[in-house]
Length: 494
Ligand code: PHE
Image (cartoon, rainbow, N blue to C red; front, side, top):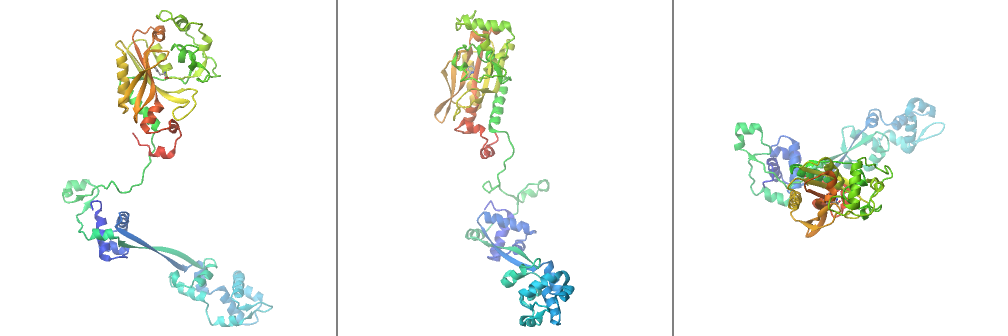
């Protein structure tokens, strides 16, 4: 009962008193409402709530059109022609002199009604003679309609059809008459004794200032009533996830960095101590470019250091990969395969501690696309370089990040990357299953040596799309990029 408004209650009781079949005007009056709209809106809410039944009676009305009114004033053209012919000795020419523009119509109907025989002279038939003193059903109907619209059901359908076959003689209109009755449930409620205290649905300054709010009853919200869904513009769920992640890292004191999609193998791999014969460097794993085919590395000193580290380990304590390092191979242009390329570039320019940087960026790999692999995806990359940086700190930070994203179960497994030692795979629990989300570790001496970095560098790179999938409840990573309108509309704003 709480969910009936004051006017709904009034309308309910009014219908109860009026009995089945009440009209909205009667209801408005009985309920003491000012406007019909108020009564009908209350009644239709009562219908939605199953308390009132509304029946509709559709009535068709016929009235005279412009031509019909002229026919009423002047008589039908065929009648005027009939009178002329009845004087005797009239030819076709006499008829057209008299009827002018209406001659064709008059002739057509004279024939159709069988009033006249056409010859040299026009001669009345028996029916024509009778018609002189006897108006036809069509004429009677026009006469009747001249008094005002009539219900179609009270008129002869054949005559109406005949009149309708002439343009603009009659017009048809439909009216819908609604009558209101209580349903069984409505009757029960109406007899149960409703609390008729006035309700207000909106608290106004007047109510507060006058103190009247004490007397009125504030209408309760009915959270179960139907309301149309609203789909405002909003950012894509993946974009929302990116913004949220960015917010978390900024709050954790990280600086955001950026970089280009097109990189040289030198920065994407060689600087990171990825051996030149590593399988990930093969054509089938990496998108190499024909333009730019080569991206020259200007820093000769750096090239020399990297070459030495790859071949012999230099003075890093490593023995390197052996063999001969090729500058040509390193200079090949490619689409970056991971965002680690941008953190090492950042580090190359910021060797002074502390460094805390992150980025969320797109990377490219020649992957076969399936429910959990894309050829273009984003990584969430980060590094921390400071005096006391430690493995424990790295694990703590990653745990903290995922926990802020709503994932409490995180685990690390030993992993392998050519640029970190130790290396760890990051996994997150979802629905009882561990899902691999990224890698992490501490940069090896072979990576940091050329840049004179004195403190440990903690590094990680994690997949964005897989994380978004988990958060958005998708089971296929491709759904993120399909832009299904229904899914987009219903996606909540976070
Ligand atoms: N670059 C690695 C990848 O793409 C992730 C990683 C980043 C691992 C930094 C260790 C350190 O999977």
